[in-house]
Structures are given as C-alpha cells and as structure tokens.
Amino acid sequence: MIDGGEAIRKLALNVARYTGLAPLAKPFVGGIGALLMLHRVTATPEKPNSVNRHLNIAPAFLDKLIADMRGRGYAFVTLDEAIERIKIGGKGGQFAAITADDAYRDNMTEALPVLEKHGTPITIYVAPGLIDGAADLWWDVVEDIVDTSSRLTLKTASGSTVVDCSTPGRKIQAVARLNAWLTLKVAEEEQGAALRELACSNGIDLSVGRPGILMSWNEIRTMAAHPLVTIGAHTINHRNLKRLSEADARHEIGDVRRILKEKLGREPRHFAYPYGYASAVGCREVGFARDAGYVSAVTTRHGVLRAEHAGFLHALPRISVNGRYQSVAHIRTMLSGVTTPLANAGKMVVTI
Ligand SMILES: [Zn+2]
Image (cartoon, rainbow, N blue to C red; front, side, top):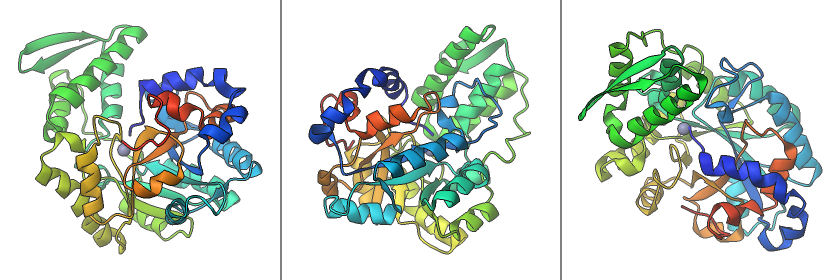
C-alpha cells in the first residue's frame, strides 16, 4: 500500500482522452523504460466492490499486459538489470521491471504462474512487521470495520464523534475520514493501538486477523529461492517515514536489511518507501535509503524512467497498474510518457 491515490485515479479517468495523442508525444515525453507497480493479483477478490479495489488486478489482465508490452518491444528485466540499464541511459533498449508491494499471498498463487509463463521477473517488497502481525494492513481493517457497522463512535483527543456508516455512500465517506484520522492525526507508532481501540469500543473483534492475505515467512522463503523473484525491503513496520524522527526512520529503513537477511539468508538490495507519495517520502528519506546501502529505492510517484534517473536511483517513479481501469490502452498511454508531466506539474523527470 498504497499508490498515488486520487490524483492518479483522476489521471487514469482522463487518460483515454490522451490515448490518440500518445504516439505523437512519444519522441518528446517518452522514457527509456518503466517500473510497473502491483499490489494484489487475484481473480477472486474477497471484496470485489472494495474502496481499495484499485490495489487489485486480475491475473488475466497481467497476462494480457505483459504480452502487449512484449509485442511492442519491451524487455522485461530484473530490477538489478533495470538499474544497470538506467545507469547507461537506456542504451540496451526499452525495458520494464515489475514490482509488487506488501507481499500479498496472491502474488505467489496467482501472479507467479503468469510470470512463469512469460519468463518475467518480479521484485516483491516485504515489511516484516506486516508478516509477523506487529503492523496492520490498516486500510483493509478500516474497510472491514466500516463495512460491519452502521455507525461508529470515534474517540479522539478532542472528544467523541459519531461516524455515519449507514449507506454505501456514507461508508465511502467514513473510510476516507478514518483513513485521514489514522494517517494524519494518530502518531505512526500509535496506529495499531488506535485501530484496536476503535474496533473494541464499537464491539468489533479484530482477533480473527486476516489469515492468508499476506505470504508467510515460509512462503516468502520459497519465493526468494525462485529464479524470477527478487525480495526487496519495505521498512520494518510499513511506516510513513516522513512522520518519524530521524533515528526511527533510519531504523525502519536500515534495520529491515538485517531482519530480511536473518529470515531469508540474503540482504535486500532494493527498497520501496511505504505509501511513496509526497507526504511520505522527501529528500531526507531518500538520503536515508542511500545511506543504508540500497542500490535503488522506489516511490509511488507516477512517471516513466528517463536517462536522468541515473542521478536519482533512490527516488524512482513507477507506473501503477490500477485495478479500477484494467485496460491495456490506459497503460500504453501511461508508458508513452504523455501522462508523466500531466501528473507532475509539467515535470518530465519525476523523483520525489
Ligand atoms: Zn506498502
């Protein structure tokens, strides 16, 4: 979690408008390649109408997308090779690397067979706290709490307020409100406790957990041994690094390398900033990722790769493959580069 959010969704809505323009624009705005960002890949989502459904694509769409990109000359490479190609300004030809955040179990059960069919590598960014249960998939938990309630009492420092969840429209508003409260008002370290308090005070049992949504350590170890899979780091506890002190942010970015080495026998070389948007990663965090020794770090900022990114290997943008708009035409338009400056106030080289 989580991609650029509303701005990118609106962009995707508008993308069709630019589709005809894309081939013409390519010589001016086209990049040397792209990093694709996935989260979930499943044909049978538990909640098909979820407010988080932009995070899921069907395996059949992944299959179609890889075939289409291949047909248009993209070489699918490992992230290590993508970095080498950026360093030489893309002279090796147009390339793409697939990345997936959070280690959803369906990456193994439903995405991997598609990737094997095409011989396409993937990098999966793991946050050990999410795997161990020390950190929550809070966006999923919030949705469940709202789904099972018609009204919620939210206790904050300034008192109690009632959140109406009585209709589908109210539920969408309630999720947005609770997400804003958790990510802006509640301290990062307090998020889990605040979530449990919200559930408990509204009579909802969270102890059941969410078995099988993410991979277990054994499954991650199996994936790590697969020739197409690279495991990257995603902080220890999936924290918004900008909201942490320097010591805590460096701990989340640096010590996850040691934890993943202990668990998997190999230090991760690549890093993904949780959330990855402007209010979660800035110059300070990019410096920390570089200092921690990573070869690369990715954001969720929208953009294609350009030769200039050789100087910004710890602030690489990605193209989110959005579950709401599973259309090869949309992705083609985004890959043309035409949406990169549109989503970034005219910037062609997107970093943070
Ligand atoms: Zn994430």
